[in-house]
Length: 575
Image 1 (cartoon, rainbow, N blue to C red):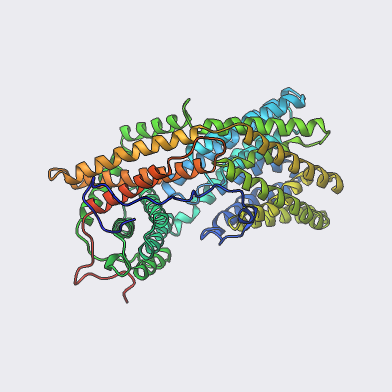
Image 2 (cartoon, rainbow, N blue to C red; image 1 turned 135 degrees about the vertical axis):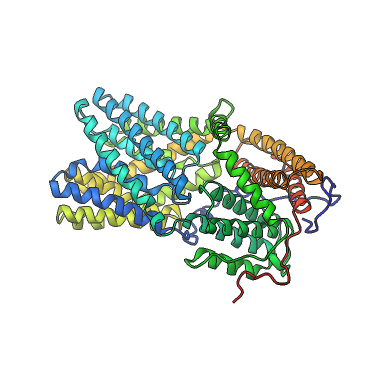
């Protein structure tokens, strides 16, 4: 890819190389390889422990540990929203709590009205499919739909009475309200924490792109900058700290619109130093002064005002409805989830396994953006669960010392699951499995051999049946999504070129067009990566994908204001 900006619309005469898709081959070693932990792994881990400890210990004090499943449904909501700014997190976690209560209510009512295993499995599979689609459409995750499915499926296969359902839901909503407070509590200490982390990631991605401005790093930098802008736009009214963060995002954009090592504002070491200071607790660093920054910040304010206006909210709702509409690429994944969960549950019931909901949850957890990623998740889930039952066997005697020991074991594994899952899903499953098995102990002791045997059978059958359903239900809409993304990128590029060449265009309009082009490039790469991992579909237009990305990055470079340090400007990382 050429690093030199060219005039908008100028075609490239160079032969395009083939891009290797991000996901294509089945590579077990790669699927099981450990990665570096997330930079915020401790936040959901601590949040879920605090959100669970208070309800757990309260029930222990009153001698009603049998109700812990109801409070746990609300406490697990503390796992969500940790990457969102607090203004948006408040709405997102509230929606999670209400969604969790709704799923639990359907399960409790169904379990109260029928004891038919066939009906319960059908309702469980349908709930899993609906939860999968809604979580993917709203992009509420991680952990996505699996927690919802775990709670609703477990409630389906426990005896209930209609008269007690309001009490169970009240416990869930009460624990959920406390989880909401826990999720928002850090705002009292560090109001702009999520925004600072998002901007720091953008600076770090920009540093990598400045060192090696290849297609992969340009796409990663574009995605990180786009995520930082979205975080700032969702953060509410601008503050002095957020205004400084916006200047840093403008600064980071240079790395992928006109990258080059040592090129002033795009110097990798300065960008990394700025990222470290931004992530810390001290003042936000000041980037070099640059022409065009004030105009772009004015454009951000205008865009924020549009998004908060009535028409902006309507547009957001229309976007969500399009994701859920008849032509949505999410529908094949929903069908996979429905069929896979139903088959897994019915097969386990036919074999006489006492807890088919474990198989439903296992199957539901497999379904990722494409078939290759689902295969990886099947390997990870199976290995993690099999190792997890060994951990459960070792810790079970300790948990039976006293009710307090059982509560402490559940809290420990809840923390361990979130601490380990960012390294790899299978490692987190090693902690999730004993926690899920220990929850059954709150209703009374069960034979260890029976629990372990059922869990092993459910895991193997659920993973095998779930992946079989995924292979049978093809997702040919993934390729259609690529075509739509190519068209959208072309339109966004044309709009950016048009406003960039128009001397009468407002600076805010130019910058909005450039951000729209950046967003379309991120969507294009996501659509290409998703389609690359699907099987049994027509060949992807890889040459068109690469050409569109190259043209988009050239347009970003050509339409960007020339930004660079001035003689008297302070530098990021300067003493």
